[in-house]
Image (tube, rainbow, N blue to C red; front, top):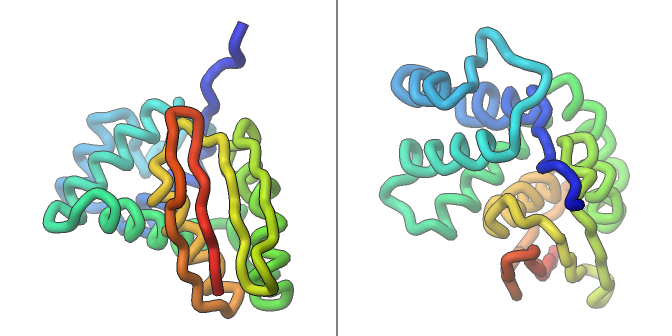
Length: 178
């Protein structure tokens, strides 16, 4: 029997939609119609609602961009927004002190803070300023994660370049340089 699908904490929705995207007007109304009302947040939400809400934000905020660029921009905004939440500040405050290499080592912990302890992360070193990350995330587009990691690494005082090397129905592999 497979485990139940993950649930996404309200703090992730808050960081992504309220603080990162500053959803108001039509976007806020459409999010509410999907099942997320930022004025009355629930404890957590089904991952399927997260996926629909992110796809909606992609269409509303970045209709002029291709999918890869749009999801990368959403990921970046989500990372900066999450860093403004109570939960996210705990992680973000340490990033400038620990630097990019240690920040990447903490990705499994950060994902667990975001309700995604179901994601297996493996990492290999590619020199002093490079890492390959394989993630078993089948719910998010790799570009969303790449954008989120770019935001995180910028908070760690790095200038990241992240490429998607491989994608499958079970996850993806990212090449991270800084």
